Image 1 (cartoon, rainbow, N blue to C red):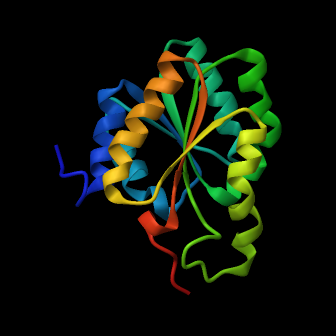
Image 2: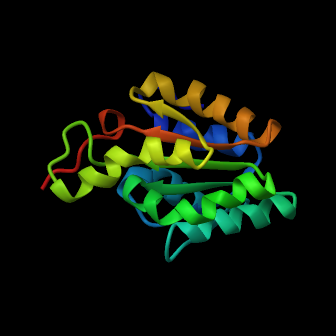
Length: 172
């Protein structure tokens, strides 16, 4: 297994697969490049490209109904697209695990990313999601491991925010 402090994206993929996560719903994003690329290359995983992030909420509801586990990979700007669909997690009581690469925070150079980046956590909490944050490589495996437990054992909707401090700010 890769060293999670030096190669946290690969260690994260291994953790997800070790916890029987087989469906990777995503909108292309550089912050999730390793997870997307590995899921595309893994014959035992299903990488599902989405046209918009909210499709992933419905897709993962269906995965749960079919006995599968999945994860929704998105950027913070896409979280706003999901707000209405996230109400399904409360009404229908299905587990949801989402990993969100953050924008509009530490080191951001694009002013358009700030409004949603700053709104993600309070909006997700208002929709009933448990929100956890990873800001350093050593946070990733323990935080996501606990998020997996909270989501799939306790049936909660859980969002893990991958801070720009962790993934790095995009350079323009």
